[in-house]
Image 1: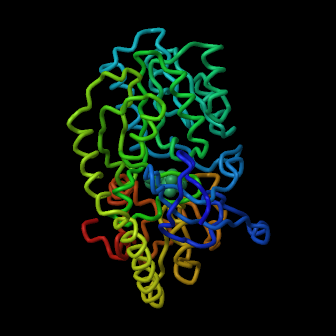
Image 2: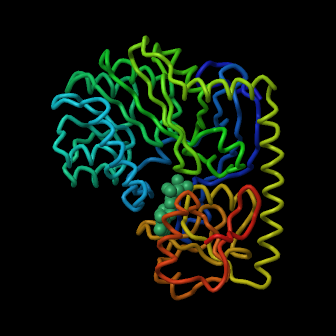
Image 3: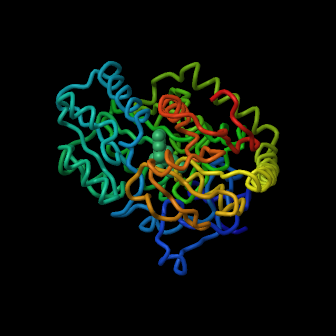
Length: 409
Ligand code: TYD
């Protein structure tokens, strides 16, 4: 394999070949089946800086556009998460009236919507997807409809000011021109500025075999090691970390422009843990590949056996389930339908394997025997809701690390 690391230009090592994949969020009509776009999805890791990345990413314009299918506002737990971080910004960094807070990928509101609600008007959201950008504008949030890079950063400094806080929640992992993004962050931040980023954590993905975190939008899955390497390259100081349970295990990175801020115990703990793992070479990545293959066989056998006798539906038309269903060749032979509350997904078909997506009323009127938890990252919220609403005739199931029924629902 000759393609080089997007960060440091060193050789990439293949970790898992997932085969042909459609665009993860491109829910489609029957008439689009014959024109569907596929690419080869291969996960790799850099031998030098350990940045875990896709070998090939479809053109970002195919992923983030006027019909972007995800609205963060549909998730109550994410809203709570945003609100808590907005409180932290006020308490920990003593935000003053004119301190600019920039959030990239703020979708239909993000953290800055809570800043706006608390009358902090020096905020700016940057999102390339037109539909979510417009939703945010309607709410009165200051917005820019752009991809973030060094040019956008220069434009913000020119038109507004430098920033005190730069936030990226589940966004940095989506942007392939990572060098231009880091250059942009470095030049946008004030001397006492802080960059806060969170994304799914690589070592959770590897340990939990949650390979479905890997899809077109996630061109990178960061570890503390790879994030630290990136920060060092751009003269930024990754000084603290917060482990989060969101999205099946995420890491929040606190990065200061001030290089003399000391590293916290939390940083040292995770940094040294990863150093020990990497002292065994590429073993953790080889194991992940074997575990993915094992998980695929296990899930396919499980669903084939159960679908002989039972109706199986999936809950949540997620990007993650696009990876699972395509990697494991799961279609309507095993899963009869998917239910989802997002208007733009309802009455469409899932990418690649073309499972129909129905609304929540259909689900409650056609309770399946088995419900596959496609949106497992929202399991707490879903279980609370479903416990109150109705009990399933049968059982809930998950795929990771092995296909199994969930007993403590
Ligand atoms: P998301 O968390 O964005 O996962 P991914 O990044 O893998 O696409 O998607 C969650 C999906 O689940 C979203 O389409 C909304 C849906 N959903 C429901 O249908 N009902 C619910 O109660 C919850 C919490 C989510």
